[in-house]
Length: 345
Ligand code: MRU
Image 1 (cartoon, rainbow, N blue to C red):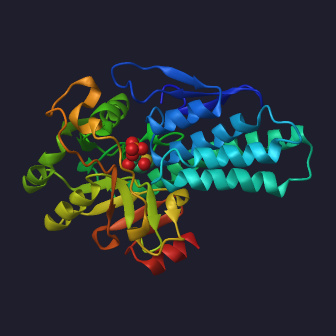
Image 2 (image 1 turned 90 degrees about the horizontal axis):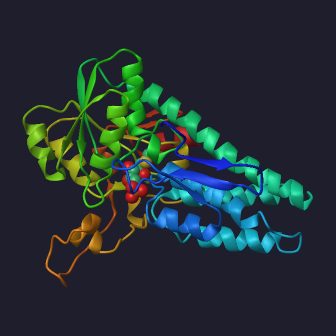
Image 3 (image 1 turned 180 degrees about the horizontal axis):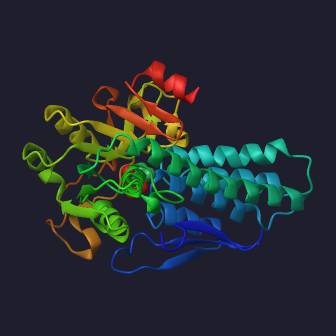
């Protein structure tokens, strides 16, 4: 990223600065969040999006929620803030993981002074961001071992630097392969309805000088049949204990297509995206978004007024369709509950 995807500006009384992802690639603009409501809106409206970046936003948003607290109101403000931010989006578990970490950091040091507690929470939020950067680099290093020189990959949605603190998860594998001197080409699904693939992934890959070709989501089968794709790499929003992985709507279909065409299908995600409390993907909450994202995308009506819509934002790919999960700790393969437990234990 030319500037960090999301960062804290100033001391405890500071504010959040983030890249507005709704405007890219037409306009590159940073926006500021100075209260919890604006962070909630930024997450809900996808100004900041992608599972790890949502976690970073929630952590920094928690600091906004306690920065003006008194000793009497601190615990109450912390609870209200974390409860409220938890309602912003339901699927990416990184949101809840980051909020839990912030609550635990405050509990562990509950006998500190008010000023110390505020500094501790700011430090914890910054640590979450720094750890995410480091995890993405390691995911890239592991993922690049699966990519041969001259390979062509397909990806869906955006799992790049914009979706994380930096560097990405799925896209990290491509960036790292290129840094190792490999030639790599990428097909990017445009990713209806909000076009994270054509707006964000294509923009990021072009910035890095990686050859990228956009296709409509519905073209993936044909492109695979034509023998153009060597591997598929996608990110994830929540991975259950057995390896079932939720990601942007359309991912499951790609995995089915990849299996049919004998193409390896990889998921790249940090440990903060695993939800070991869920035995399998059936209990992963799937966000349903407003129908006008389908009928009136980016302000232009493309369907009759009043038509019915159904707009689930994510789907769940069963573990048996995933050739491997690339994490910062190593590669989980084959993908099953035992191997997830060993890597994430
Ligand atoms: O609705 P979004 O844009 O937040 O969905 C994002 C995705 O589905 C990403 O693929 C996922 O969060 C992985 S990001 C490293």
